[in-house]
Image (tube, rainbow, N blue to C red):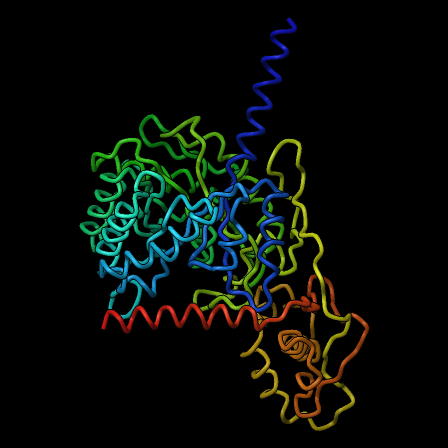
Length: 471
């Protein structure tokens, strides 16, 4: 009897370790005032995160990850795909961004060649560059004698598959089918995984009539039967659709990585902490069990994302800046259990803030003729996505409050510089917190934004150098 109890205990413990020991996140760095990289690495470790995916190489981040025990997938940004179609540039990129950091102790395991690139770029130039870029990166890794240790992959979007509703009918979309098949062949020949981004939130965002049934893992949607397989959520349908496509191409049991999955907390009517907690917790609980076509096989994944990014582009929607599991200051947004013995995420330790003061609209000013222009200027140079329809401040603030929020967003972005609260005499500084309900008027972090600017200038300089060499 004691042996039986011990076996049950060990089985339970192994399940806990499995959940915690394989947790990946996307670490985006489009942030005006990033927390110190080492603090972020400590945040990852304190929460049991052992894998990160970077959309582009960031020197400070890659250095901080050295000897951390965290595996890294580093990305070739879409903007460099054309350059990577040149073998010499691919070799140089691998030397500078893989070999160099592995030698100093950063455990780089994967190179992501682009990100959701089909039909991307001017005149589809990214699409035409994916396969030659992938081929050259693979050759560069082999040339550096890293082909067995560092694998390349190409993150595609679930939308690149035909919407056949049933996995058994799945195929790549006709306009990319040939190219996608050749990419899959290259990956298979080199023992590399296929990466797919699956974000059901986007289906809901892009289609107001899209049914919520089946999006969440705890919903009671009617099951979808596909032969011997039964589906209860759209994630499993998307994942197994790719499995079918790969199997039909002859790549049975090819490793599949979910490159991005998550739920934003602001910037849309469906983007809130409640839905994010429900979806993300449901996925984490589900990931250990596999899918109908791959049962009892843990899903490898990278959550979208680690932290909010206030400088990320919003062409697809305001929610793009709010995917983070953590706020801009490293505080968790909602409870999330990564294991049976960890009911919530841990916050970043040692975070420093600027003084508790805010810039708001001075309501005693009579002439407000310049107010519309001031608000536009503030929001063009700071993050005001919370003010729009569906945002966390929409419905909590009146016109005065909206102006104050915009003023404060710009004021904090400018490190609380007194001149940044002028707005033609319309702004003034207060020490009473004007936050209202879910609408938070932030206090900026006490980390110089010039560091982020220098990083971006450096990245642009590298991209320009590569472009000029190719020319």
